[in-house]
Length: 108
Image 1 (tube, rainbow, N blue to C red):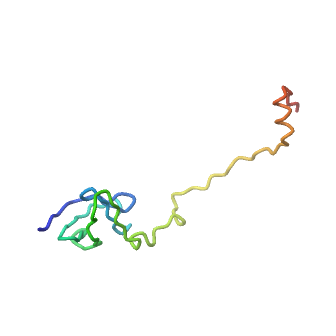
Image 2: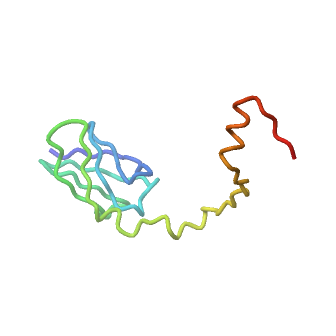
Image 3: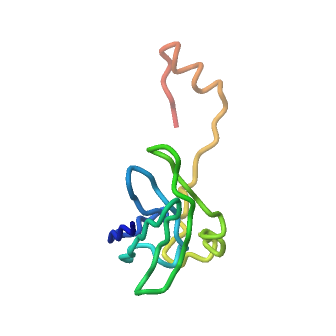
């Protein structure tokens, strides 16, 4: 028997089906895909094109991943990341803090 289900790909490249999660190539994040269960195989399609196949998980709450689905995914070229300048920090001797703990006051 064939079972078809529509799912949306999460940001971690996984789709949920029958209490398990299955990976798809990262390019399909936030896309709607169709899952087909046939025997012990889960086939995942995007617009009618097969994009992933996995063996059906044997137990519930399993994550079935193909690491090839994450190849090419990298943050090093992410143009949305911004470099933030850190403020200058004054370097003090620990003696200053020792003086403060004894009730002393900072002068100047």
